[in-house]
Structures are given as structure tokens and as C-alpha cells.
Amino acid sequence: MGCKGSVLVVDDDPDLREALARALESLGCTAAIAVDGLDALARLEEAHRPCFVLLDLNMPRLDGENFTRIVRSDPERSSLPIVTMSAGKNKLTNLGVEAHFEKPFSFDALVAMVMRFCREVPCLEGAPKSLPGGDAPQTLESASDVESVRLTGTHPI
Image (cartoon, rainbow, N blue to C red):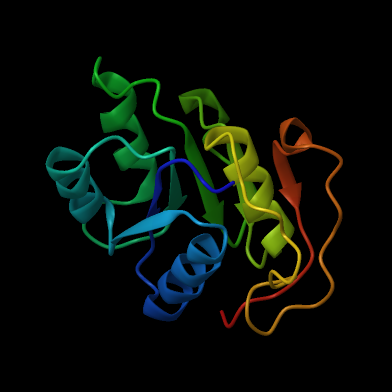
């Protein structure tokens, strides 16, 4: 049993991108990486559709808000699930993002999104309980309970 598909991770912080990629790979997912919104658009052009996009809001060149507007206006990609992350509250609910994580967030939050959008995850026995440097994670009742929440745990930012 494993993750069915890939997740596009979009963040300008190389340490966070690497930590998220490792966490996703520990769940059996393939992690595609992009350094900003322009890079993410290019990745969407060259690869098959990911399960979801994990998107930082504050990036150079093309930020998360404008990336989301572009994707939502494209009939072929408008239904692509987007989960935003930032150091603040979700300000994109009017653009139809599926969830928002306030940094720092827990490994459990990531697992919930994989369960929600990738449909199948491996047994989590022995999986890390938080992103590197993290505290004990918040337990989530179900993936559908995650909308816009501040989750415990830390990462290096």
C-alpha cells in the first residue's frame, strides 16, 4: 500500500523543500520540486498531474496567490488541489484552495493531505512523527477536518 502519485512542492526555501520531499517520499509519494510559481508552472507543463500542489505563498518571481489565480483560470488545471502554506493565516479562501497550513506545521498535517488527495498511504509504523526539528504533532481526526488550521510541530524556518 503506498501513495498513488506525486506531490508538487513549491517553496523558495531549499531546506524546507528538502524536508518536505523526504517526508513525502517516506509516505511512498514522488515529490516534484519547484523553487517558485514560475518554476511550478513549468513543472506542470512537463509532467503528469500531481495529486496536489503544496504551495508557499511568499516567493520571488511568481508568488502563491498569482500561481493559484493562473491555475484556477486554466480549464485543464482548475480542479487541481492546492494546499497553501505560510507564516500567516490563509488569505486565499476566495481562490478556492483546499487547505492552508501555518508554518511551522506537523508531519501529521502532511499525512492528512496525502490521505485526502492521493487516496492511499502506506502503514505509518515507523514513519517520522514531525518534520525535522519538530515537536509532537497534533492529531487530526480525518483529512477532511483540515481546512485552515495552525498545527503544532516545527521545521527549521
